[in-house]
Image (cartoon, rainbow over all chains, first blue to last red; front, side, top):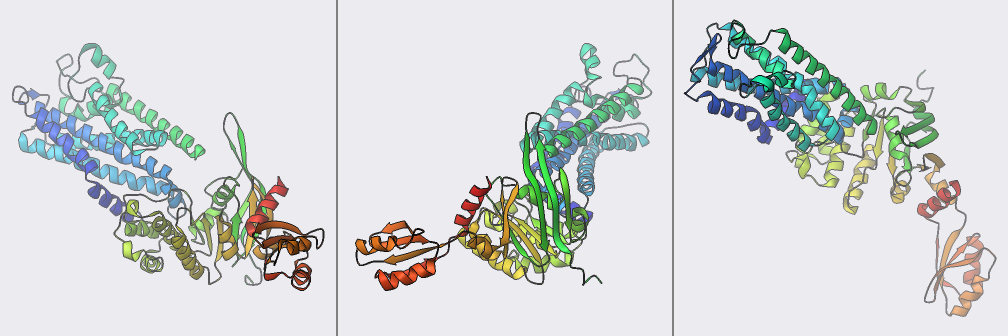
Length: 251
Length: 305
C-alpha cells in the first residue's frame, strides 16, 4: 500500500514542477553562482578546496529546504481532511508519515546529488575520496531533522502558503547558520545557537577536520555542532508533537 | 450459530462528547442510545449543530467519545474499519486537489488492499469518464461522487454518509440517490446524516431526529410523519359563505390558507370533515394531504426544547 502512495506522490511532484524546480535547481544555481568566483574558489581549504566547501553548503541548504517543504505537506494534508480519509482505511497514520519521509529523503537526496555532480564537474576537489560520501550522508541524514520543523509549521498554520514561509525562513536560518557565507566575531558566536549551524558544520567536518585550531575557517570542536544539531532536533520534535496535538484537539 | 444471533450493525450507548476550551465547554452530544439493525436504512435528521457530524465521527472512531461506547457489528470502530466492514463519506475536506480522480481512488484502494475493485467502483460511480481530471477541477457534485466511490472501495457492510449531497444541485442529487439505491441492496446497512427532510422522507425507512445533541424522536419515517395529528384538507367553494359555514364544522377545523375561493383547512378528523364538505357544504376539487416531515420536525424540536 505504501509503494502506490509513494508513486503517486512523485507523480504529483513532477506535475507540480514549481516545487521540484525550487528543490533541485535553486541550490544548483546558487552553487554555480557562488562556487565559480575565480578569485577565491580554487584556494585550498582543509583536505580540499573552497569549491568543495561551497558545494557542501549549497547541497545542505537544498536538502534541508526540500525536506521542510515536503514534510510540511504531512501537516497541511492532514488538516485538509485527507488524514480523516486515510483514517478510514487499513493504513496506519504512521505509514502515511513514513511514505512522505521517503519522498522527502529522495527529493533531498536528488537535490544534494545534483549539486555534488555539478561540483565534481566544475572542479570541487578533496584529497581523500571517502569525504565525498561522508559529507553527502551527513547532509542527507541531517536534513531529516528539519522535517519536524516543516510538520510543526504546517500544523500551526494549516496552509500551503505557510509552508512557503517556512521554506523562506530557512534562507534566514542559512544566513545566520554560517551556511552561505563565513561569519565572524559576534555574528559567529550567535550563529552557534541557530538551527542550521550544527547541521552544516557537521557536513563540513570531514573536509575541515585536520585544520589546526586558530586558523581562519578552522572547525569548532566536534561536540559543538553535534550539541547544536541534537538540541535543535529535540526542539523541532517537541514543536511538531505539540503543534500536532493542538491542531488535532481543535479539529 | 452466528446466524441465529442477529448482531446490530451499529450500537451506541450513553454516547457523549464534550468539547472543552479554556473558556467554555460545549456539549455537542449529550448522551445517545441507539441500536441499528443490519440492513436498515436510517437517516439522522437535524439542523446544523444538532450533533450529527460529531456522532458520525464517534461511530467511525475519528473522535474519541467523552463517555459511552460504540460498537459496529460487535467490533470497536477501529477494528471494523481495518476489517473493511464500515466506511463513510465524510462531510468536510477529504480530497487533495492536485491528485487526479484515478490516483485518488487508486491510493485509497491500495490502503484498503482492494486494488481489484478500482475499475468496477469507478465504473459504477461514473468516474471512469473523468478519471484523468484533477480533483480540484471537479465540480462539487463530482467531488462528492469521488468520496462516495472511496467509501465503496472496501465493499463495506455498513455505509455511513455525512451530508452526502451537500453542494450538489437538484439533478446531481437525484443521480446520487439513484446510484445509492443500487448500492443499498445486498443487506448493506446505510446511515446518512442530512438536513434535507426530503431525503429522509424519500430514502430512509427509519428516521432519527436529532436536535441540540439529543435524539428527540426515532421511528419509522412514516410513523414520524403521523406523529403530527390531522391532515390538511383543501377544497374550492361556490362562494365565501359556503366556506365560512364549512369552517364551523367542528372545533378542530381551522382555515390554514385562503386563495380566492379555494380554502385549505387543518382538521383532526379529516375523513368525516371531507365527507361533510362534499355532502353538505358544496365543496369540490377536494385534496387531502398529510403534513410534511418538515412540519413534524418543527413541532418535535419545539416540544423538546
